[in-house]
Amino acid sequence: MPNRGAVRLLVLLLTASVLAVAAPALADEQVPRPVLNLDFPDPAVVATPNGLVAYSTGDRVPHAWSRSADGPWRRGPGLLTHRPTWSRDGGIWAVDVARVEGQWLLYYATPVRGIGETGRCVGVARSDSARGPFRPVGRAPLVCPTYARTPTAQDPLLPRDPTLPRAGVIDPSFFRDADGTAYLLYKTDRIPSTVRIVALAPSGQRVAPGATSLELVRSQGVLENPVVTQRPEGYVMLTSEGDWTRCGYATRWLRSVTLLDWAAAESGMLLDVDTTGVCGPGGADLVEGSGGRTLVFLHGWTCRSTDLPCTGTGKWDHKPRQRGIRAMYAAELGWVGGVPEVTDWLRAP
Image (cartoon, rainbow, N blue to C red; front, side, top):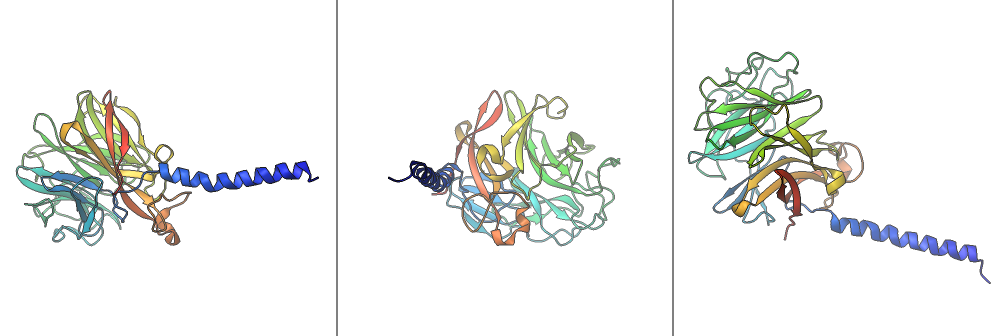
């Protein structure tokens, strides 16, 4: 007779082998898939009569377009015709696009002289079409610290906060309040991180006369890429937090009853790798659709030329063999008591 202990051991080993093969497949089915599995970080998305247009971090602002949120998405070239005279060469980060008084405005962060290798300031460009081309407006930045070697910006950040690093400003985001006032939110780069807001002129192309920026939120860690929407319960801000090169990069929500004071804001996690399975879900933007539908677009790391998330630890931009890219995901948001939550993930057809 065969040894019963050996038989039991064999059965256990076979069962474990089956589970080891089946478990990843089951997990893969549950993990969201990107709607655009190309390198498309920090997506900004707008709705037009002809469909959706998305914009990405990159040289001259790459874009993509689609008839519907789940695709198919087609990627196109950069839409910024040229750099303004006050900038220098380098990638353009985390843009935002809005339609203001009949024109499409592109807010962008571009490298400038005098702030080290990556220091940036915020400019604005305009176009008659959401798909460009966008041409820079003005001979000076819209927002820029006084220590940069550029013409004086319309929002020069005076007086400079000595507690903040001399690293420039990035991540512009347009918002129009219910009373019609236009604002620009942006982030002071590196840590501590702050999110600031400044009122714009009705055209959206200049800072409002006499306006100065206000600090809304501060973090001792990385807090970036703000976007604000208004709900009946108050103003909701989405921000990205953490290291964008790692799976731990995440999207947090904050809610305040007033736009210009977030000292008592509530806060919670919207998207992280533990709850979504997406590696580094951040760079989020919101699109308000018909019938109260809210869509959120974001990026996450996929690896090895697949549409599956990168898994593990480390900095994915430092692992060339993994061929990691920041692909674009889309999800539908629901609102429970004015707090956002993902109700469904969209998938490419």
